[in-house]
Image (cartoon, rainbow over all chains, first blue to last red; front, side):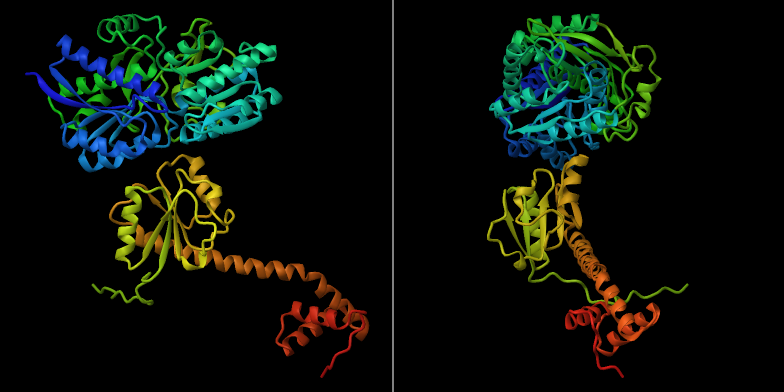
Length: 396
Length: 207
């Protein structure tokens, strides 16, 4: 018997982080369309869509309306951590469940949230491992002025200093601000080994463009020797920047360029059912995977009960477009195998290193301490690789 | 089986008539705090982003401040110098944010979202912690002052040794006796001797 299931889709498709929100919206919508069209699962989903338009204060009310008016118990959505924090009281009051599909700064583990994106031991820590050996240990940290930038930079500072490096400077920019001339001047003067960029949206694009111009004036700022690194770039942003992003590095569980049969099938589905999504990113693929896992859990349990579906998800292994996806029972976070990729000269990313075995999420960095010796169990059991980074397999 | 009857040694703590500052953007959490404060007979006043520059901190008995979006320039006092019990409103448990709240000086915390309870216990804990902090600060201040006056004591002892041909131990005992007679601390007596005899020669009415 086919189950009818309303599913909440809560993303901001306009506003300061609209490019990321649109990715989530399109990814979730694609999964809903595909599940309904294919009929492979005995579930029929109906999207209950709300758009907070980047206004943090609107999230809680819209989330409540999805549950109370739209009948949704499962919600896929939120991009920023503040918006996630805003909906949590509503989830707790209404007994609903958020599937959060973005990387974030960690230090949370709510029973009503399933964290499908990467937490720090799955993004900034492995990316720093890769970069510190190749470019040096004296970075500059630049971020958007909110919790993602503050905390990711804080973790990076601690990690860099534990490895004997020194942060050359740390600057924050208001969300949406594109006036970054002063920061570029500081970069020019301080010549950091690399720049960790936790800026989002237009601020990030403005920074990459200005850095490119700096590189045109001074060869010292060629990304081959002195790259910008980010844990939150998408294919769409990089495509828009084109050659100006060439050579910079990022990390994510999914890249459009992943050369796997699962991704080939996924991209074929994207072309067929979401022709507007030209550059699917990790934000897109994770929202897609979240809907798939919910539907699989509903099908497996024959129930729309959030607790039972979560339990089913925790024992499920879903072949996501980015590989096997499991939910860690203790933390409700995804077990992920991130890849490190370099921006190509025509937009898009090419993978340069990949995780040998999936990394168990450690949202409070309780096990993966900020030293290479005391990294998490998932990392230390992995073998192979080079230069004392056994868990990173270098491809290029 | 006997059971001890609970007899409070102090009257039930009350905050009636007190005022609290709430440094948080207008939000359901602020409404919840004000509702609870009202039940306690208190008044809450919400400010965001900054406290008024001409704020009379003496009129307020507690402050609730946002640990998530807070920053130093919001306050009219320095870090660790909050003139009233402070309660951090914690949403993000990211250690950077918690560290900031600690640096500001927090006596208790409440997790956001704030619902129908928690304020009374947080106020009790914060007042207790604040009082202890004040006591310690005062004690440390007094000790620091005494430490700073060590030289005076040494000088007074040396002067007594010379003036009255005493051993160091006897001179110190003499200084302590003088201080006790005058109901002064040793440091106070030493300061008086030094002040009254800037040339170093000591004269006093001894018994």
